[in-house]
Length: 529
Image 1 (cartoon, helix red, strand yellow):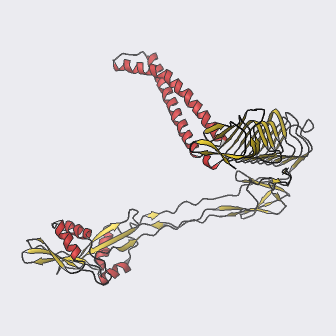
Image 2 (cartoon, rainbow, N blue to C red):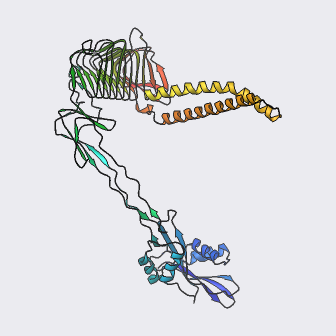
Image 3 (tube, rainbow, N blue to C red):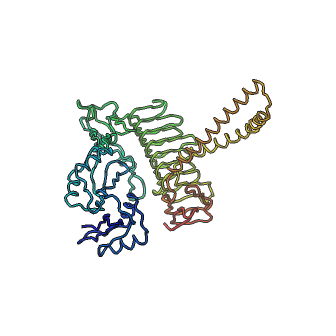
């Protein structure tokens, strides 16, 4: 039994009697005593009260509260309701010696009057009135928490990961024909299954207010042609043999387009699925595919655009005009005088005088494995065997920043600079007009209209600058952490090569071997491989 206290009336005096705990009960807390006396408007010197509470841990104590006899105090309680209005607790104080006790019915009615209508724990209340454990918080009411539902989700029955990498042969060359990137499917294959959402159940707070569960996300199966939807709209299956792919949440099955060469005999190609070219792609031709593009020969100064991967078995000589754009990965035996942009990784045996950007890594560590001239950028790391050139060809490699986000930041910064200069030309005129109006100078209607137009333009440009700064801040939050990326050189790196990691860079001053470049304490450092 916990220690507790009660008021006692003596002739011509009011006393506070403190009782020690029994067994494993808790001693009286000074805060409870002060709180109660303040609530009942009794005064007592704190040092005296503190000493009495400390001694009451061992034996009964009495403290004089005044030289007058006051009315008896009934048994009472203090109510505490949680901030979310889901739980209510009471702490009981003993009645004065000879004073009246409360009843369970009285407490329940009192709680209802104070707005607590639901979830009253009658068993806990009955337990108190059976034992009367004072100064102990008791849970007297508890709301009903909402039961959260489950989001719908789609289970895909094929590989949706586009990060599969080419296999390296024992001699260091890349096997471009066994990449495990394409997903073959047969007629009747189940491609995806929709597991529907499960709605939640509402809850209720102490006042009876409804607490809605979180919204559950619904899903629908999205698909293109050559696919059949089941009657209950929960399963899709392939209607033909072909290749299955997930593009921006939509499942596509295509029976692949096969051509020998892309030249005057075919013209430009624009296809919904995958395109496989058995020979070469000639200069100035375009190949566009929603899926993958596989070229078993050579690509010249052509433009290839794929929603998926681009694979060129014998490489590309872009002649300064060739462009590759892939929503997935780019794999080519070599890239020379070309521009290549991949949302995923780029893998090649050599990159020569080209501009290459990758949303993932760049791997040029095959048998030849060199990057010479041009600029190679990757959000992830770059792995290369030989970097730069003994002849001093300008070579730049950059890691640790999404190339697209970085380009957008540069574009926004340029826009901010231009808008700021424009505002500087408006400010003197607007300031002069403001001073004239302050002096009471009257402006003619034409001048007023001109000033209003300039003020509107000033606000427009100011808002544009603020919006651009906010976008820059948001883009910088999503930039890859430069500390997690590196440029790894398995062979030699030559002087004159510029290494950029995030927003810092260095120029290699002398030939080094078997090293990696990392960002450390705000600088680019060379470390052992």
